[in-house]
Length: 148
Image 1 (cartoon, rainbow, N blue to C red):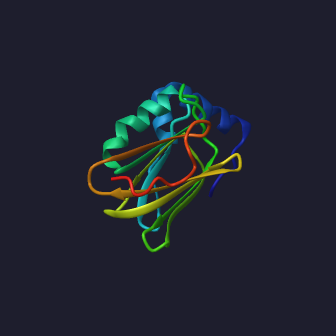
Image 2: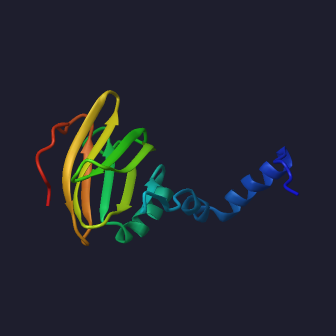
């Protein structure tokens, strides 16, 4: 029999999160899968950013979303990744500020949207990590061509 959450059981969950400290943050950034592609999304707060950075070597596409070159991050990005033929590989709402994916080698089109602005980037993914940082206020939304 499954018991409904009560204020007492919710309080216990909160107490557990306080007890676990940074380990609770790691639990917030759990790997997920879509269309056979593993990804992880998060990085809100320093502890979660540290947890994400600890996992980055497992992912060959590493995206970071920011509002300014000064490093103000954003976590409200609609992210769509398509393969070279235009087929949808990933579509994830409310991503950021860090998003890592493990993609098969190939060319992909990344589309990241927020505040009515959509960035498009074509990227060639291999086994080595490819990092892309998008700054909403400073970068051009236009695709500069395939980034190797």
